[in-house]
Image 1 (cartoon, one colour):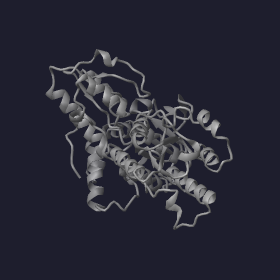
Image 2 (tube, one colour):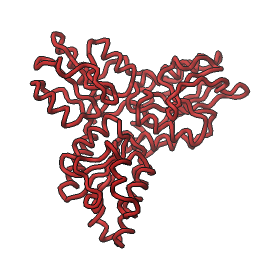
Image 3 (cartoon, rainbow, N blue to C red):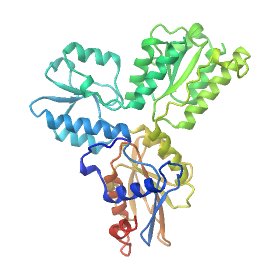
Image 4 (cartoon, helix red, strand yellow):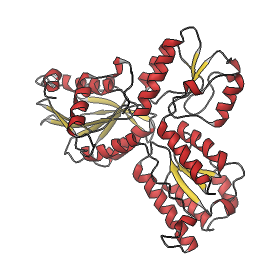
Length: 407
């Protein structure tokens, strides 16, 4: 796989050594068991896969190269490059201005732009409407488009099933940049609707089966269906694609449920289901799939707590937290600074969107065992920082250098 020129501040000698060793031992990526870092009084298990993915490294490389090559121009980011506060702050400090926030609210008006300006499209992609606006100003978007190829894969899959007259059901968070972009691209060629979760899918099925009046659909799915959507006509043939960072199991469950709904409505067998339900296969990106599978392997280890590192508005990271929460106390943090002491940790509850402080989160009467992973937009340097901070709480812990030497 291609390697990228990412600023060294995001790299970690410890994590790089571990990842390279695991890669040598498991080139086919079939081993999802975690890596043990034994510091003596502290035992840390790292997930087999975590951190920067292909799309993120590609976006970061393009962004910093653009800054270096265009010191005489104004450079804007359409919205956050990726969902990591450190990377976005570094870009701002380099002079990059953000045009929108993550929900699409305007920060800098498009009317202030001119054809000499550079606008970077983030890894999530953007809508066709915004592309059109930028091109009308005379801004070149292709050269500075960092859209992840796995997001584009979803768009291509949507186009393919649209050509066969299927309606596109998008499993994603309705306000997320990627979902907004995918909806825009999908609805260009086919009727489209966004479902956030299984509850939405179950409500959608009631319209498919005629159990709810069509008029109610337009209220229930307001701002989540394409222009001209006809409940009676456009729910007869459907296909499911997803925001690439959703939980794989959730997307599969939704697809299976809607497939069963179609079988029920039309009394179809498995061979004939294609007449009403498209075989879209999984449109989850490889990194999301690997990171989620690696967490499942990580959770096989008996441990005291799990720590997940990443941006608080990162979708893929929040799903890793969800998986960990099912098994043991889990703390979602965005840097080592949140480890206030051995007795207290500041962490984010993404369910309530509130930052909390928990005391006595580490055991006092036995060797602490901590599971650690991070999201696809989290620099490895932040993970090493968390490891170093944890080790600093244990006076007799082995040094990082000793552990690196073992890899």
